[in-house]
Length: 196
Image (cartoon, rainbow, N blue to C red; front, side, top):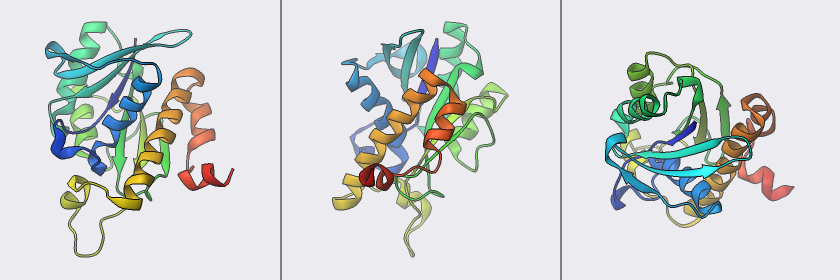
């Protein structure tokens, strides 16, 4: 079982916020296969199962809130008897421009609390991640306010395009492997796709 975890916070208040890009990426992936998310109390997550040509994929949105994401991931790995290397996490990154992607096969959290929770709970950083750029906070706006404030107008449209590009990148990771996806998507932006 391959586990794709989109990080975010549950509830309508967090819709279209930078911090919820992980949720929106796995929602886009589920929509492409007409899959529906269902509440899984035992996992502390909403999950949707989708089929790939050679393996099953579980899309997950932990409902533990961002800073406790690790507990949900751990429960799913235990249930499916999977390894951390079977996990791919989709997460926002304020150090990347809005819509820019960065894929890594493993690594540290970079200060992201959701990744920190997963690394701490699993006892390893040996899992892939797709970071989706959500841009830096504007001058005078603190980081927490930036990642929890909804995008609007042109920024919302760009955010939605970035979500779809990231869904393509995650699918590439699953179907072709992280190395191939890194070559195809690292540094790629929605502008690159628009000019192609």
